[in-house]
Length: 599
Image 1 (tube, one colour):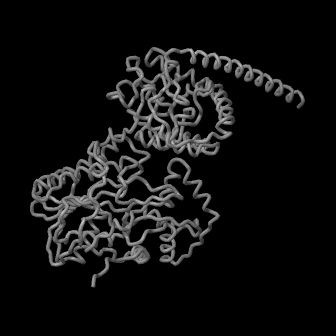
Image 2: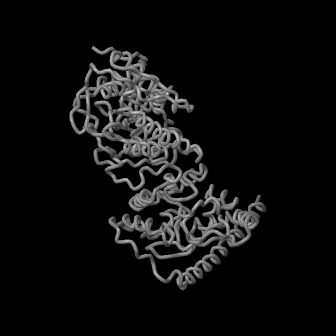
Image 3: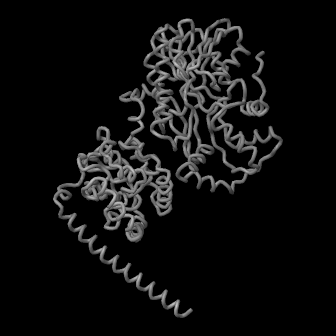
């Protein structure tokens, strides 16, 4: 036993000596590189001076001043040692794929906007233009090597930046270093003071969208990191990076804001007012219950379309004649729309798992949610239809606010989708409104969650959860929702309005009360003869989950976040559609009852 211990002790001492010597040698090399960098004419010419002073001044903590650099140097050294075999394998793969230099260097903006040379594994061919951001290249895919595509997918091309961290040009966590000529990104970051700290290998923006983010959004996230930076927040970013890399989230060849390159351009160069649209009718309206109208629903087997048709025929049978057409083939193009007073377009791809979807499938969203909707609207106008109703969504305003924060959408809130699904809806929303004139009235609906018996999406998931969980956090949040019968009643009265002056209007019907997740769950359990116990001790777990990157954080914020339309936006003088309250709507949904019979 003593011999084994002495043997292990000698091995341990040898390893310590080797690591210590390696650390000392690398530190000397790093010091030499920093001195060379300071003498480099290309880097010494000037630091970036285009941006103005930040609007937010950040305080430097002890963690920023001392401990963060110690942690960076220690962890980067460990990384260099452990990953050295990986570096060798990648180097061989790069050279044999496209002979030339293994490493690629670029002039980047570092701490206090001073330039430095950033190192990456070369992922692009030798004939690629230098110092041009990927998103500014025309068809960037043509320049990427086979090995490079794999390296980018799993962020392995960033590994040489561990050396940049070791020598002090970068940190492990921080805003990603901008190219010296990315003035738009640098100046946006300056608003938040995000240029005053060392750039990072990964950061808050990296795990919240990465290449799919527009520059203002990316800069704002960098600003959030500036405000919240701490050891705890850095660990959160590091853990989130591991998950993002494993899921290869947010990597889109072409770089910044690629959602718009995959999508459509109808929102480009539109003013905020044009994106928002005219909210409401701008005047009282009068519903004519003696009126008779013919309606074409474009999109069969739709929950909303089918529910509206059944409700309208049972409650307003005298007023409506309704036809439904399938949009899955081209037969609709041959149909004569001229006989209809309204075209109600409900066809579309519903919200899916947007985190795990290919670019080809994203394109399908735009083809159906945007292109098809626009084409139907154009045909309706050409055929002489008087009014067109388009089913947009509250999703055009982005995701729910995170747990503990408020998000109230008002008349001045500008639509800003958080993903391609919301963008595909907004693109159609904006384009179709431009078709409106005095002979072709356009009504865009941006409803919140529509729920009820047979509904799809998040509500059925909440119902299943409610039935299984007797214990729940003691959290009260607020969400706009609309019960399917309230929505159908709104549609019926909307189609019976005598007249309204605006050519294009945007409407946001919702229940008369905001909904709380715990309130909905309590009602569901009551309907099933069960009680629920609320524990505030669980609340910290929800808070932690809401800060978790990836699906866990999104689900926590979706369930316990806040996302509301201001109530006055959903009140239209002359239309009385809020006929069922939240508790009764849950009762009817759980019992699977038919639509109410109007008095």
